[in-house]
Image (tube, rainbow, N blue to C red; front, side, top):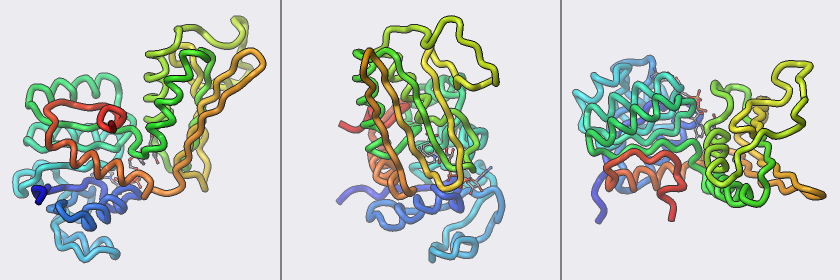
Length: 267
Ligand SMILES: NC(=O)c1ccc[n+]([C@@H]2O[C@H](COP(=O)([O-])OP(=O)(O)OC[C@H]3O[C@@H](n4cnc5c(N)ncnc54)[C@H](O)[C@@H]3O)[C@@H](O)[C@H]2O)c1
Ligand SMILES: O=C(O)C1=N[C@H](C(=O)O)CCC1
């Protein structure tokens, strides 16, 4: 019999949060103990969320939540600023954060890593929970050794707040580990409309597309003499991320440091 894991979800009314509530309710050794929303303080989750019977309490103040509820894990699926504050507060209260929220700065990631180490607590920050996306990133990292010219095109729904996506940033970071650093394109190229060549990460270009109808998609294009290679992943719904959330919650209980990217825990 596996130990019960007590969970708080931040952002339960969001697109990802709704799926996470379902996942926790459907998983035998997971128990939802509270949710954090930016409104509805003191109400029951079932009152604000028609698809659940859950009577857990809604908190608008994360400090208040952790002072009143016994929790092992926080699942954060909110916004960049809130997600960072929630992650920090959870660690300070001895609660392990599983963070899907994207858009953290490098300084924020470093600060959270140091805090997790100081507190000897597991913390998982996963720019993408979909197994196919992890494979896309790993295959791209492998390909970059042979194809140093690469452009990343990420495509998301038009309600997304951060650009480039967390997945695109992570992909570029992983590729950088295997790619000979160099500036791509013609050395004299000029943009006649600013931004035409996308964001520049170590000479690679990242292009962000935002359109209604999309969920989360990315293709990594490699070019060499007479050939191209395209590695693509598509998430068509938010359920595609939930097996990664589940494995993160299960794994985090035995971690004592911050892990950035699911590729480090999927063996
Ligand atoms: N890692 C992954 O695999 C993955 C997958 C999808 C989305 N995401 C990321 O997850 C985050 C959420 O995405 P989404 O599509 O569900 O967004 P969403 O806008 O549908 O949901 C965000 C929720 O956060 C809530 N929120 C905002 N501020 C809050 C606060 N101060 N306190 C409590 N709740 C607050 C909002 O009310 C909303 O319900 C985004 O950062 C997105 O990039 C990550
Ligand atoms: O819907 C989003 O927002 C997503 N964000 C992640 C990212 O920034 O990479 C992952 C996929 C969905």
